[in-house]
Length: 120
Image (tube, rainbow, N blue to C red; front, side):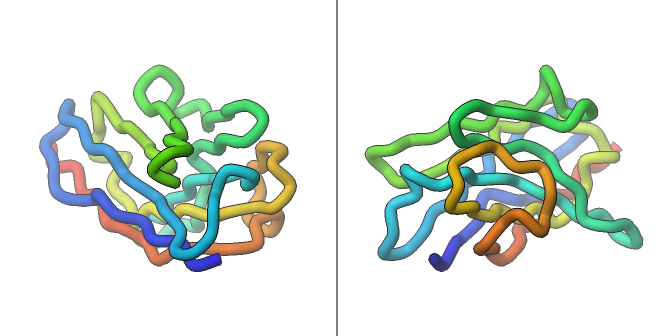
C-alpha cells in the first residue's frame, strides 16, 4: 500500500488546515489509518487514528477531527485552533487490523510526510 499525505502548509496560530491521506491502487476501507507527527528534535508521536472507532492524543482532543470518505478513498485530519506546538511533519500510516492503534510499530505502511508550520 502506497500512502500519500497532503494538505500541509503554513498557517497562523488559531487557523485551520485539513490533511488528506489516500492510497494508490488500494482501498483504505478495511484499514485502520493513523496520523503521526514529528517535530524538529523530537520523536514521532501519535496524533489520531480511525478504524472501528476513533482515538486522539490528549493534546489535540477538541481541536482535531479524523474522518474517512469511503467514496473518495480518503482519510482526513481536520485541524482547527492550531498552535505553534502543532508544528511538525505529519505522516499517515495504515494498519491491516482495523482496530485503532496508537503505537508506530503496529502500523504496516507509511506515507511520506507533509509539513505543517504554525506561526505565532
